[in-house]
Image (cartoon, rainbow, N blue to C red):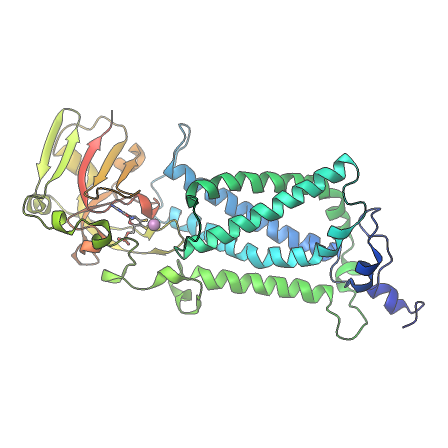
Length: 399
Ligand SMILES: Nc1nc2c(c(=O)[nH]1)N[C@H]1C(S)=C(S)[C@@H](COP(=O)(O)O)O[C@H]1N2
Ligand SMILES: [Mo]
C-alpha cells in the first residue's frame, strides 16, 4: 500500500489519537480499524448511558419498595406499574450487555494510549473507566444470572447488586463529565465520522458497527422481554421463568420447598388477624364465607418475569374491619413458613386501603393451588412478587 493513498490515511489514522493529545504505540495504530472511532464510541455510549440510567432508576425504585426509606411513597395504582418498571429494569440491563461489548471494542485500542497515567485529570478518567467497566460487568452478569435464579457465588445477590449500582452509576457520572468535550465534538461531526466507509476491502465500517450494536441490543431485549410481554414469549430464549406453572402462573418456591404442606392443609389451620387490641382467628371456611371480591392483579417477580392473574378473595380492608377498627399504619403479613427470606412482608397504608388488595383464596377461577399459597395469600397491586406473601398465618396492624 501507498502511504499517499487517501484511502490508507483514512483507514490507518496517524499516531496521534483524534480525541486528545495522546499517543498510541505503533503496534496498536498499525491494526486499528477506523470503526473503532470516537464517533462509534460516543454514539453507542449514549445508548449505553440511557439504558444504564433506566436500569439504575428502575432498580432503585424496586429496592425502595422493598426497603422503604421514610420519605418514600409508591402508589397502588395503576396495578401494572411495578410490572412495567421491573420489566424495564431487566430489559434495559440485558440490552446494555451487547452495547457495553461494542463500546469496549470501540475504545479498546485507546486503553493503550500513552501516557498510561499522566496528569490528575487523566488519572481520574482512567480510574473511573476501570471502576465503571468492572462494576457494570458485575451488575449485568449478576443481574442476568439472577433472572435465571442461578447463583454461582457466595455473596447475597440483593445487597451486593444494590451497593454496586451506586458505584457504577457514580463512575458513569465521572466518566461522562470527563468525556463531555470529546462526546460533543464527536457528535458534531456526523458526516465525516459515521458516513466515511473504509476503502480497504473486508474492513468493517463505522456505520456497520453501529447498526450491528443496535441490532444486537434489540435481539437481546426481545430475548428477555417475553418474561413480561406474553406476545414475545415464544421468541424469548432468555426468559427462563415464563414457563407455565399450576393455574397458568410460574412458581418460585413450591409448598414442598417451603415445607408448609402439613400446616397449610391441617384441620386446625387459622389465619390470625390483629387490629390493635382486637384479635381473631379465621378458619379457611370462615374466610370463604366472608364477602368475596375479584381483582385482576399481575404477579411481577423482581427477577423480571410477570404474568396477569385473576384473583378472588377478601378485601384486606374488609377483613380488618371484621376484626376491629383500622386507624391507619403499616400491616404485617406472616407466612406458615418457618424459615426463608420471604416469610414476612410489610404493606404500607396506601396499599392496605386499596380496593384491589386482597387476601386471595382463588386464582384464575379455581381454589388457590398449594404452590400459589393455599389456604390464602396476600395480593396487592404494583408490588414486587417477593412481597406477595403466600401461605399466610397471621396479619397484624403495626402500631
Ligand atoms: N411465604 C412465601 N411467599 C412468597 C415467596 C416465598 O418464598 N415464601 N416467594 C415470593 C416470590 S419471590 C414471588 S415472585 C411470588 C410468586 O408467586 P407464585 O409462586 O404464586 O407465582 O411469591 C412470593 N411469595
Ligand atoms: Mo420473586
